Image (cartoon, rainbow, N blue to C red; front, side, top):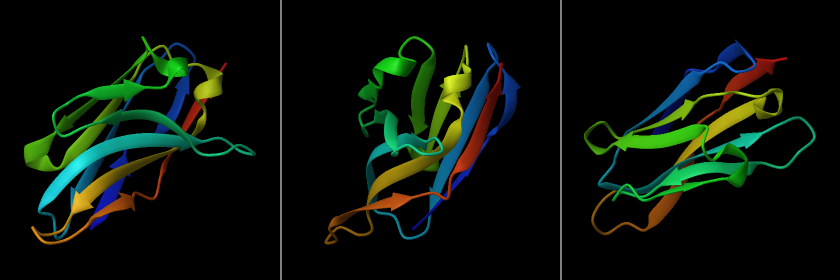
Length: 120
């Protein structure tokens, strides 16, 4: 299973970006998908997560600004980021809890990360 993230870049404070992440490979079912971020010198933290039934969870720091969504048919998850702040600068990683076939356990898979830089 591979996860490919895209959509990062440089944006001014107050701007918007949309991150995309597509899972591919041997996939029977994807449960929760999510986005984490890691800024230099900090631990990786949860930004947002979404279940297969589209129940979402957002970190308090991004509520009201970020929206997570998914397309189950495309095995994809998205993160719409509005009103970006310099403190949102980080490498953003997508992940997915994947069952590879009906008898398999659920494993967590990670993308390589995409850099988001917000200038003040």
